[in-house]
Structures are given as structure tokens and as C-alpha cells.
Image (tube, rainbow, N blue to C red; front, side, top):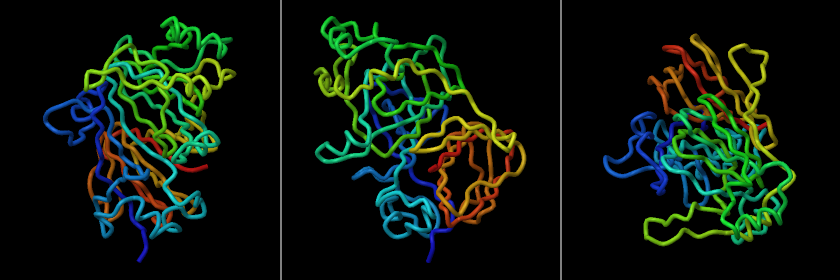
Length: 323
């Protein structure tokens, strides 16, 4: 038995206080009829947070079980660890998120329990007029400056702020202080970590009526003060005019595809996470014999080999994989 077919997983939802309804109304996710939902975790293997296979012979198994049972089939020659190293999600920011920072791998290893660091990238699916991102500190801001700003309730004055556009990509290395602003619908690829230190939370309270926990000292110790402002990525051409490279780093590669014909994806060296952002595709594989529209996500294991995709209409997708 081998893991040689494209995998669809059941999404899991997070109902954080800053969420909305666009995961359902825009991305066609099966969110409950009532309530607000902030995140749809599409591909995850992180402790008890596990994607569950929805199609084919391995339906019902978790991603973590597949990693243990089929490591070579899943990863190919790019077997990085005993867990799936990346996490992919959609986010609906109906309110501003907290100003926060994530540790790098070395810092994450010192936590109890240990965790990976969290380098991530955002792809802006929709930006309402005036929507903002807070990405990096302004030039020259020191730890002392930021600590004083916390005491004076002026953290936002220290932040680099920009108004992103639909189609923009922002690369957020670990140790970069950041936050999504209200009015943004985002696809996020990240290391499989959920460690977050909150520096500032707009003075609001959680669902229990109490202020949410802050981690001011840990944040101040974690932030890279040499990083400075973050700007949108400049897409880079590849050998295929239908594919642009958005991010290359040591944790993942992120490509954007725009095509209206047939195209093969995947290889024997590594897995690929694929997310359809616009349009609709159909795969050539019997275990994925369905039209996949906006908001659809699937994983192509290394053993699946090149998977032929046919665009049923002009299509935009993200392709995410290990370097």
C-alpha cells in the first residue's frame, strides 16, 4: 500500500473574537449557520490539532498518522521531521488582530513543551477599503523605545503600517512583530507552530469579558529590532510564464499560478500544498475526480507524481512546498 493520490482534508474552524462569516460566504467553507469564524485550518499536524483525510483509501486518518505510516511517500527525499512541517489556513479578519510576535526555531526549542518557530507568509485574498496591516517596526525603533511605548499605550506609533491590495503577498519571518487589520481575507502558509506572544491587544476583552493575556516581556525579548518595516513581496518570474515566485525561504516556497489550460503539479522529491483562489480546476486522478473551486485545498504527496490539472475557467492557485 502506498500514499499515491492527492489528499483532501476536512477543514477545522477557529471562532476567535476577531472573525466573521467570509470563510463561508466567500471561500465556500461549511461553517456553522450561526457564529463568527476567524480561521479555517486546511492542513495541520500539530499535537492535537490534526487534519483528517476526507477522500480515498486513507479517509478518516489524521495527517499525523500519514506522516508516521507513509513518510517516504508523503515527503519523498524532503523528509524534514517526524511531523508535517507546514500549516496552511485561511483567515477572516473582521476586527484587528493583536500586535504579536512568534519565536524562531532556536527560541521555540526552549519552550515547555518545545515547539517550532513560526515564519509565515500572507496572501491577501480581499482587502476592504482602508484595511491595514501592521508589519514590522519603523526604522530605528529600539527595545527601549518599544518598552516605553507599551507603558505609554503608544505601541501603534512604533509600527510600520500599510494598506495592502488584493493579490499582495507579505513575508513575515519569525521574530517580526505584526498584525492583520480588520477587513482582510487572507491565505497563510507557516511553519507548523501555534506559539504566539501578544504585545498589544487594543485594550479589548475576550468572550469571557476579561482582557486577553498579554506577553509583553516575552514579546520584547523575541522581537528582531534590526528587521525594520516589511514591504509587499515583488513577484519573481520563473521558467514558466504562468508561475510567479512570491516567497523563497528556508522554511517553504510559495508560488502563484495563473492558467487557463492544463498544467502538471508535484514531483517525486516533495509534497505540494495547493489552494485554489480563483476559478476552478479538475484533476486527472480518480481519487480527486471533482471540480475544485475557490477555497479548495489539497495536498499532492511526493508518491503521487506529477498531477495533471485542467482549468475549467481562468484559475489562480497557490503552490506551497519545501525548498
